Image (tube, rainbow, N blue to C red; front, side, top):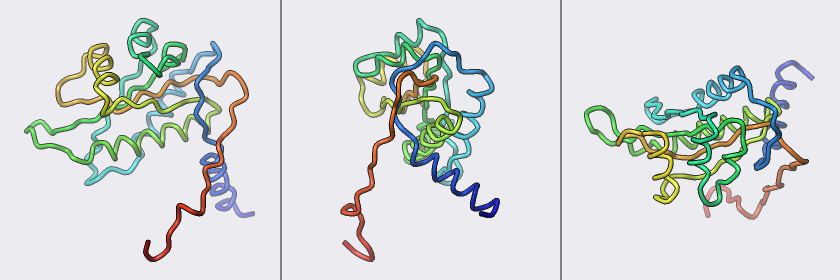
Length: 177
C-alpha cells in the first residue's frame, strides 16, 4: 500500500469505528485533546464560509449538571462537555439560515476526531427543542443570536462500546428515485 492508501484507509476505518459512547472513566481529557477536537470541528465545511459555529467547553461539575437534563444525564459524568452553538444572525441582524447544517458538519468532525484519539463521545441534541436549549442558554449565558445546537460529552470510554452497522443498500437510489 502507498502512503496515500494507508492514510485513506485510516480515515475510512475511523468513520466506520465511530460510535456513541455514553459512559466514561474518571481519566481526564487533556487540554491538548480538547484543542485537537476543536481544530477538527472548525475544519468542517461551511456554507459561504460563514463558519457560524461557536463552542463552549465545560469542565465544571456544577455547569455540566445544569446541562444534564432529561436524556442527557451522561453529560454530568463526562470529564468534558463541548456545547456546539450557532451564530444565527450576523451583527447587522441578517439571518444565517445555514447555521444548523454548518454546526452539524462541525459536530461530525469533532466526533470523528474523538474516535481517532481513542476518546468516547456522543451527539446529544439541543436545537430545536426548547426544553433542551433553555437550560443550556441559561447555564452558559448565551446571547440572543447564539443558539445551542448540541452538546457532546467527551471522555475515555468505560465498557466495550461497538459501532452499529448502519449500511442499508435499500436507502440508495441511482440516477432517480
